[in-house]
Amino acid sequence: MLLLKLTIAPLLLLFIHYAQKRFGSFVSGIIPGLPITSGPISYFIALEQGKLFASNSAVASLYGMSGIGLFCFCYAAMLAKYGVVKALFSALTLWCAFSVFTLLLPINIALACVISLSVLAVLALASSKLKFKPDAKPFTAAWELPLKMLLVSCFIMLVTFISANIGAMWSGLLSTFPVILAVMGSIAHASDKKYSAYKVLNGGIIGSLGGCVFFAVIALALKFNFDIWQVYAVAAICSTLFTIITSHYVNRKQFAQPVTV
Image (tube, one colour):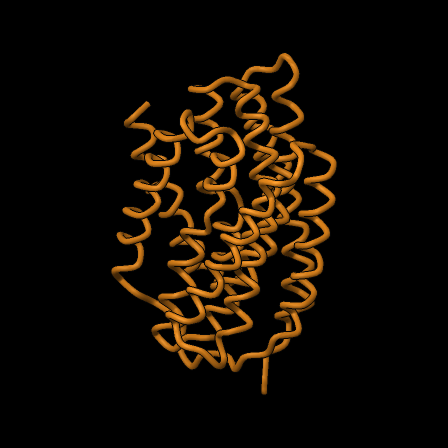
């Protein structure tokens, strides 16, 4: 189990890295918006803490998807006028405040779906109105990949280790902490690649919509007599298909023409 926890994150991040090089920042933002870290964490929680705990945790993660969207939109909105520290701090503060608020909400799949899908749909529309000049050159940073691998591996280990002591809601919420998007967005921002940072963050919002589908399936299916691996496989397929369709539509509409200001 320890070996799996240490290897799954680097493999997923390698996939994201090559997706960014091949398809650009928008697609590489969609992928970590999906449950790339929170999905494996949820799976390990299901194996270690049981289906009921994991199902309740998945509802919290479902609420947390809208928190990721709020983080991405807040950071994207502050890109043009503020530096990395202020933008990142403000976005993370908003994520923390929203996460604390969701602790007051009931563990209800339907309510979590309505709140998260509504919030993310509004944020996706609002973020499409933000305008940035295209970068002269694509963003690249050789040290970005090792940093993301280290941070995400440590994060997965930490959340799964403390999950039994912090409860299902906190486990689910912490698993959605936007660690990859924060790293990718802030590095691009610090490198003065604001358009690349914007596309990463905008992609994170779209990916979070797919994350909602993933955790809705998990929260519901774990209540029935299915094998754990079957539940997560079906959830991953549904989430991926939904995200491909949604991102194709958004990418065609939003990025078909070069952005000029």
